[in-house]
Amino acid sequence: MFMDKAYLLPENVENQLLDTISSLIEKGKKEVACNANSVLTMLYWNIGEHINRFIIEKKRAEYGQQIVVTLSRVLVLKYGNSFEEKNLRRMMQFAEKFSDSEIVVSLSRQLSWSHIIALIPLQSTESMLFYATKAAAEMLSVRELRKAIKGKAFERATIANTQLPQTVTNTQNIFKDPYLLDFLGLNDDFLERDLEQAIINELEHFLLELGAGFTFVDRQKRMIIDGEDHNLDLLFYHRKLKRLIAIELKVDKFRAKYKGQMELYLKWLDKYEKEPDENSPIGIILCTETSKEQVELLEMHKDGMMVAEYWTKLPPKALFEQKINQALAEAKVRLERRQLG
Image 1 (spheres, rainbow, N blue to C red):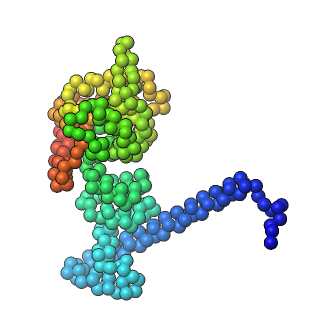
Image 2 (cartoon, helix red, strand yellow):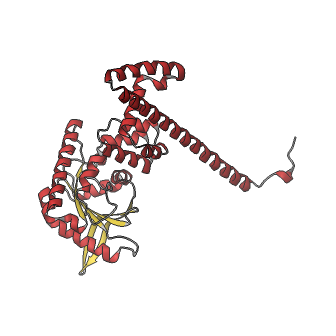
Image 3 (cartoon, one colour):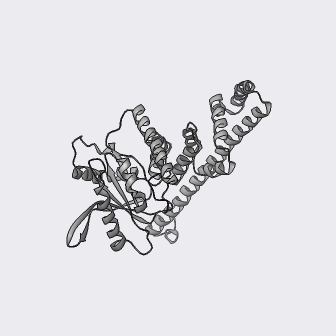
């Protein structure tokens, strides 16, 4: 049986219709999955919250241990392996660590139960909310979330936060210290130009390490000042901050003279490159070592600048965690001293 030609649509119209309907189907499937995930996450939170409350009301910790085992056996028989003892205990931890139901409702719309499981082992509420917000805002997969946690993104952002000028708004958790550049594959004796070229070669990875919102603008940005050429190593733009981000690369420890160089670049960018609706640029000086006392004495945060280390090779896990935790503790002390001063 042949279809009447009058009912045949032109090929371009058919393709357009197919694309439209396909988009609708894909969108619908995502919404169904999102709604199902939200319902499931809220169910698990409610289960955990009810068990925790029941145990508290009984005021018997040993009874709580027993009831979870018994309850899981019954639930597994009735509803399947999702309610095994270890999963019930995860639900209890989830409800305990995320006690605000309004926060849970918001998270459930954006994160899967697998994301929540990755967050549960974290020790502080602040770090859990940091990673939950990051995962939701950047649409991180569970694997990417675990990588961020392993790479101490929260601690590195917190260290950077202590350097930021308090007069500049919305900069919290945007920057890091140190930046992990092990993906560049550099040898120990690299030069500044080698570092810059390696970053350009691995620009996608570098942007991922910088974080969400950064856009590459230029390399070796030329500035003519008093008839002389000056070149900024890397120039980026941050959409949320609405600011140009100037980055200078150094292959040694921070020196006081680097501040004057960056200050000059920022003044030039502010005068000649900044758009009317943009905020003043921020400068980041990346060094192998930050010379913390010099940075503190120079009060660089007041001039829209920060100094951050970069690591081209990562130490073993235990030493990595030790160095990050030590740097975090020292940064907090410096911030408290600055606030008292």
